[in-house]
Length: 304
Ligand SMILES: [Zn+2]
Image (cartoon, rainbow, N blue to C red):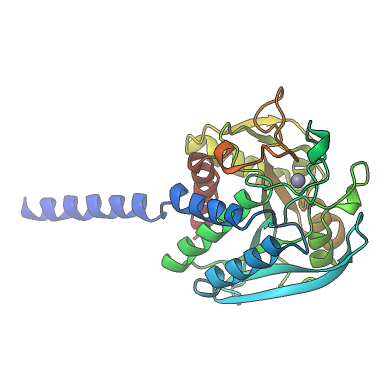
């Protein structure tokens, strides 16, 4: 009987072990990174906030990742014609591992609130709490999880600059950081990439983005299936918008089958905060970051 009790305790302990093996993603901690970025003000290339945010990311990531590097390039800003220095930031975990994956987000914010209803403010930069800060906030907290809970695969966290200074109607005038990255790949070619953009909306509704499904259908089904299993209610397993985002240059220019996780209706189909002065902290939530971060953590740690 004693043996049976020991065996039961062992089985119980190992099953608890299985359940707790996957770390918890802290949405509140991620949200503090979102607020910190917004406290720097707009982070459009060339601005004071842009420089402050760059320093902040390097500070946070250097203490957590195995290697951190920047990939710098210059671009001419479309309206001011000013020459500005841009920086992609690359934080690597297990850079020598055989299997390498990549998770990215853009960190710059749009220099103009051109979808704003107020004509007076259309030419001023936006704060980008959702469009800019949200994806990065998840990546910074993910770096903490990866640091505290070592695992086996190579994870490259990449922050792209210059995603959002394009002109509407000209897709390739956007995503300059990911284009430069894809043309001058500074890491081992990853098996695939997951890009996070506009993932902080308090009213979270993340549909399957159509180009993502074309570029990597199996990864899309894996991610949305996992979200369903984990009861992450912000994920909707239905195809909706087609959006030209950083996942497109990754695939077109570097052959990386990349998927975009994006909630394009911010906050919903009727009201629009995207590229307006309403893209602020108050319209985002820690719970939304928790859901997307949790999906990333389970995706990574399920592969061990
Ligand atoms: Zn944008």
